[in-house]
Length: 182
Image (cartoon, rainbow, N blue to C red; front, side, top):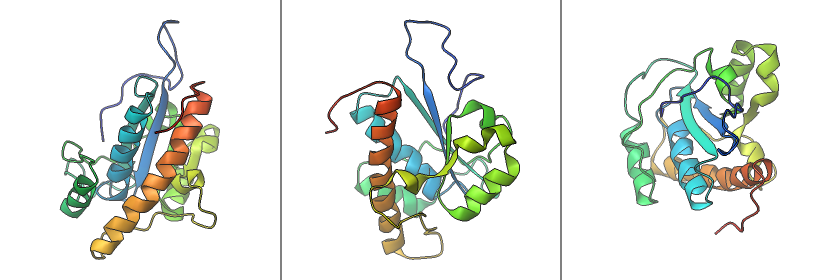
């Protein structure tokens, strides 16, 4: 959803600048789960002091909502927890994303399967489910809250927050930052 720049996710042309890890959150329409994950991860990364080292974006596997803001229910539930989704706009994943991002994190198995079908074989090792970073065993997917009620949006936030905490720890390790998470 935010604009990404650069040609290669780990290119470091200036030795004084840290290498950036680029993370793309992916769901179906890019209006509920992936923009929520983008905002939550951005908040967590900022709090962990990694903002200069991590670039975050989101996209959908389908183009139904291109250029639309996130679902108003996602915006409202996220805002109650201190996350701002209002400036984000939906976009569809594009072929360049498979080169641009180091991690492409799908919200569920269907979107992961779509990514695996679309991505070149050399990018497959960068495709994962977001929930692989969550500490809770047995949880693999972030369910789509679109056709449900308020509890679904709260559950999505709970799952994404948990997975993003684990993801921040992973980002700390790969970026060589050993700070205590607040």
